[in-house]
Length: 138
Image (cartoon, rainbow, N blue to C red; front, side):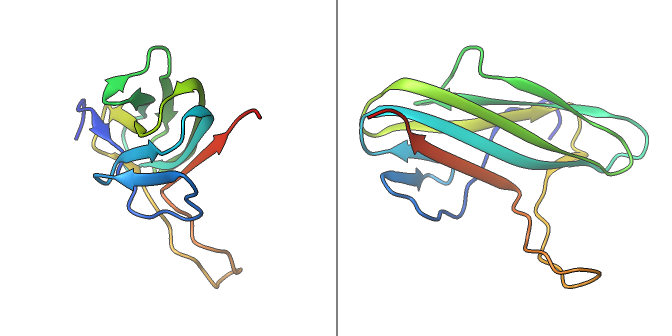
């Protein structure tokens, strides 16, 4: 929906050591420490008439994190772009949670996955979102 803030749904996890997804959109970290949270979103603009913007940012425990947003412009005619952000937080307590939030100027901007393909060449599937949480420091 245009001009509406949404939390990114994260339905699947792999290699989730000390990190779980709660309520489908909360990246919960079970051990206190410093972490680098990285995201990658596969975006497409299906509008044939105009370019559109999407803003992406982080929230911690339900509150937007100051200065964590980035704006991307998706070009018209199925223009694709990868939105990539990272954030380091050195004050994470056990069971703090993070969310990836976004808002777009048009419903034509989508966060989209693509299936694997076998022709004209073989490649694996492209997920709509990748989130990586890495502990930083000793």
